[in-house]
Image: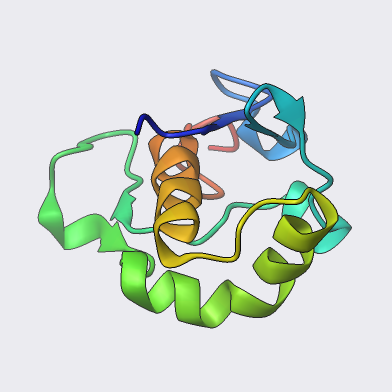
Length: 111
């Protein structure tokens, strides 16, 4: 099965901190809690705009640890949207978000 989630951060370029998450399950928008909607998701990646390949700047939680740390609010979102509370769906959610995750300062706009 193909990943049923699509996640994107609403802004690009040098204004990442001004955006919000737009996350869809099978093309239907999900209601993400306010404390998560306007912040990075904390997924693992290199978020350095100068050298996005430098492992020294690797940060965030890997898939397993992220799911454990976020299970409570993520389960609430899944229940509200009638998404199966199954591990593979949580992994797909993480993978979709991870593709567009960011960190404050990762765009270089504030320096």
